[in-house]
Image (tube, rainbow, N blue to C red):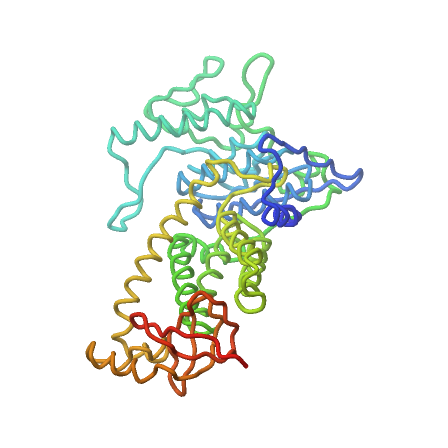
Length: 473
């Protein structure tokens, strides 16, 4: 993952990529360097927990960890967040173990079925995964309407049975934990009656049934995480436990407005381009893009490679505009890099995956970009209409039409400026800014490229823009 940005830099510059069907196999860990990564799920199953899980799984894959332990102590949470966590866990190619430390209720219980083995501490419980909803009045949990409950339970049960079967667990346990209508009978003993929701203690989960005898759900009861690793033969392995940083909650609301940060960034940079130089719009635009990349980084969607490549693209565009005008290649390459990084920063890529994302992975980033593009156009139009009426207009924009109260007055002012000489403040390609005395005007050449700092002369006007020509030095 951390090396992929070097590959993708080449992609952005050369517009080439690895074939979509490529499926690299992770390199095996060096002998005697076994690694265990711990994913702690000790709070509500919500977007911040998704970000933690995504980051932990990706780091475990980068480290070529042999074992991923999901340490669970939760009352449950959101179903959509649960599914995202399970999707991340399914990406890990090594051994996965769920360790129930005290309780795994609701979504937490179903996450355990995504692990290949489940262990529990003495006195712990797992189950009670029927779908519920929070009261809109803030009164806590309330039951779903019967029809909605049946549909939700059926959908969740089907999705979770797939995970249970994949990892060797009894899918009927999922039914009994999710559906009130499911009865579970093992060896003639009723484990769960109809109308009840299955919840198992560590002893009940470890009880054996069938021929040959097999544990109902838990592979064993162990007193602690250290005991678990010793039981699995990983007592001497390197242990990596990634703790929540607190920034995950911040990233939740930052990511909720990804389209807004893009809209502000695009609109502000465009406004700065029209104004020339480096001022308040450029600062606002850079802050907006920083929020966009910060959210995707904390959410575990991308590393630091994408903001670094975005800055590289911005530098190339600036070089095209300010240092090597007319080269085209620099500006075009920079613009492509900026566009690619904006999209890829929201693509959920895992180590070992093909370098190029699939279409489903691009849906959300492209959707955000489309919203931002439409919003930025509207923002630019609104600013173009409202900004001249504000006190900030004289600070941010030129004085070409300031103080002009009528077409006739504007014509007189413009006529008096024909023949005036000034200095180009920005590269005229052909439009830009030039200063004449104390006034800064929007100017345009007749197609010529004039460097910044070059003397220019007004030879006419087109609307509010002064038409200028270069003055030979």
